[in-house]
Length: 640
Image (cartoon, rainbow, N blue to C red):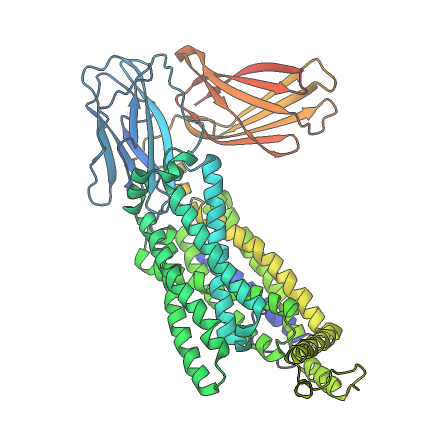
């Protein structure tokens, strides 16, 4: 809701200008600090170098292969695999040796002796210090390059159906945390009478259930998410035990234990606290619940801070408590907003005083969010190029824009809040002066029949609730406030989704460093973007068109591939099926299949397409325009 102090009277010119000036100052400060830059930082680990280097040709077989990373990683037995040209393991299949020294993170695997000449593929997969799985592959040759039958994995670590379900659970966990913490804080701080309101109880309990269920799903899927990618491995006891030994696994288990304490807090809040009538006793219980609930909420927020972006990189000892404050401020603001929305639509009893108190809470939350968000943005981005040229930076810009929209809508809610005070008083006066047009049931005590007395009591309660609802719905200020708060909630849902995406996206600073390389990194083969245009004709009705392909950066390693299909009229054309394959015929590599995802009408995309070595690659494109009309076309392109 409103992110400003309680309303103190209208000022139609100065208040919009002051709000706009405050917003402009905050945005300017954010991007000003982003320009300041800082020392190196990382979040998702990145491969910074290898020996032998990517694409290198060595005279004799090395005794081992070593990989260097930008930060600490967790490895397992098969984290680094070396495959010979026939696809057989060329390494000894022992657990990678930790060769790290000081700030340099390096792991190595020993190779069999007497390896023959040819091209070898190194495939690696590990878990970054911020809990996200990472993977990649590259090649080197002994003596001279040769043909290879190794097909590089087309799916990134953490992808596939398991990755989709895990990401959904991650989003649900954030949503449940916001409702649980924000709803409870709303009841204790803004509207104590809400403890007896059934809609408020349901909101908080559903937040607890959502967070608990999402945490269990993430714990069970953690092993397949970072490993095989198969749902069946969710109940592998050995895999689950290995997860419990990791930092993310410990964080999830800690969260479940804290949720047990949260269940006790909820029981007291909506049980003993709701029934307490003595004001002094209730005040003491409020203080105890606030302290206990604050400790539990802080602990739950810390389970994210200790296992994700904040736990690694520069100034981790500062970043983790800052991240906890950021999460608590988000919950207080967005969770309180959801609570206010439920109260305005589902309960007739919430008054203007509770709305004004939430206005003050929301203002404090926004101040905390601005301060912590500026620090986090500087830490994870650090430069204009990383802000505008990386996915993380672009999502961050979108988040700032959504916050600006949310504050703009909150300003209108604040205006309705100020008007609500006088309107509420007037409505109460009107209700007191309103003649008793409806017949009231006779006194309950006048009827000796207990069943009849209970029935009359229910009728009286229903009439009272109906009268309150009629007065509430007739109040134009309250209706306006409901609409503006509903708009805020809609923007908040999108904002929460973008925030969740940020937590699973490689920070801009790290992505830029990995793309630019470091002194110890092996430089990829030089290249440039590949642009192809290929006409096709499947022979059927509406079977003619043109395929346009862009491959960026067009060099060895990971590439982004985009495909556009235009019909004969030049307009975007959708087709039932589109497949691609890459073949380096001179080295007998491939075909390497690529199955792009549809982004929009006539537009497909695939990320992390691995090009193992430079050369003249043949790109086969299969287009199907109907059940029976299909054609495969090809074109060569120099990559690397």
